[in-house]
Every structure is written in C-alpha cells, then in structure tokens.
Length: 323
Image (cartoon, rainbow, N blue to C red; front, top):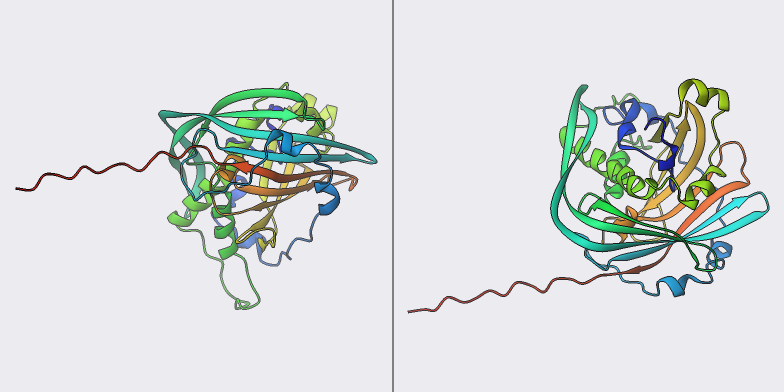
C-alpha cells in the first residue's frame, strides 16, 4: 500500500504488498536457521480483567463449523493499548448485517516456480459492520462495507503451509529447500490474503479513532522520509510457526510491519482453523504487538464473545410418486 496509512489496523496490511519479497516462492531459504519466536509481552489475566463492560456489547460464546458467514454472525474483540503508564481499553464489535447474492473476484500477485502469476479467489459478499467502543461501551465509530464472506478467515491455512517449510531437527543438514507448488502457493496466498482483506474492510476508516490509537504503537516514519517518499507499508511473516495452547489446533505466527523500509511493529498473531463466526475476525483469537523501539508501547487483542446468526433450514426433498 502506498501513501495510505489509514489502513493500519490490528497489525496492518494491504493487498498490494501481499507476498512481497518472494516469500511464496521460497520461504524456507529465509527461515533456515530462524529460532522459534520468543513470546511478546502479554499480561493475560490482568488484560482480561480490564474488559468490564464486554457483556453489555455481546454476551455469547457460539462457535459453528466452517461455512459462509450468515446475517447475525458477530464477534467482539477487546483491545488494550499501553503507552508507558497509560492504559486504554477499546471494544471492537464485528457483525454481518446482510448476505448478498453477489460474488467478488479477489486477485493476488505472487510467483509459482519463479514465474509471476495472479491467483483469483471468487467469494460471496456480505455487508460487514464495524463498531468501535470506548472503555465505558460508548460508541466511538460505526461503519459498514462489503466483505468477501468465503475468503475471510483463511489465515490458519497460510500458517499450515509455512509450517511445512520450516527446518526441524530431523531435517538433513544438506537438504535443499524446494519452492512451493501451485496448490501450496494458492493455500498460502489466499490464507495470508484473507488477513489483508480483513485489514482492508476495517482499515478504510481514515477518521476512525482506532487509527489514532495505533499510531501510538507503530513507530512513525520521519517527516523527511514522508516528504520525499510518502508512506510505503510492507508486512511479512518471519520466524517459525509455533503451536498455541489457547485453543485446539491454534498456531502463532510473527509478523513484522515496516514503514518506508524501517521496522514499525512486531506482532504475534494466534489463529485457529476457519469457523463461524470467527472468520469475521480472520480466525484470529489473540494478538500481541509491540513497538520495535519501545517495549512499553504495546497492543493486546483478545476475542471476548462470539455469536452465530441464523442458519438456513435444510432443503426439503420432495418424493416423486411411484407407479
């Protein structure tokens, strides 16, 4: 993404920087000797105690199987922003307001076998609503936009692919890293792309108070850099994928955000396999992010509640009369 920092959200992203730097074509080469990431700062029990008004916004814990999102699906996220001794609590409620009969084709640029290619994901559309509340459950921002229902929530798929390319202790020391094949590239591309789509439908809110909060965590580029280069944002996975005890099959991936070529944010993202309604939040159940230069500037995100919308009744088959 160029010249548009309004799209910085929980960790930031853009379809335009998807798979930047050749991550899809040869991920193993960049991760041969990378140790498993040490956890970023997180105060779990203390963090959860801060969300005192959560049940006023959503009081449910429904989780359903994978499938297209339905009207009424909701996810409530709790955000804690720490800057030095200052702590602020925010709530983010995501809702499916309407299922649309339309489809949208989302394209991702990447490489397969060293050759540039375009991956296309055809997805049904829903109208997704984003509401941001303060610590007292007072509404700060409210907006709605179209979102690709069946594409969102595939982040865990990308983690599974990267996990295959990690060198473990049983790997022969002279093993040659191979490139991703077409199927792996698609799974990785659509998985990581779903995260950027999620950031897009949240991040297109230039006036949202959430943008101001995130600026306090992200390391800003210098005024001189912005004057000559504008703002260039890139984001990529780094380090090993590790298992998480937060939920069955949960995995953690570290992402690094750079702005104008300089580190701006480090984030550990915990995701689970796609399910309803958590696909609304890109299948993310936890985020722990920190400034690369100031460990007292952190962002913590947790899923607080989930609610399933209606499920259409099964089709009734009519028996044909026998003669």
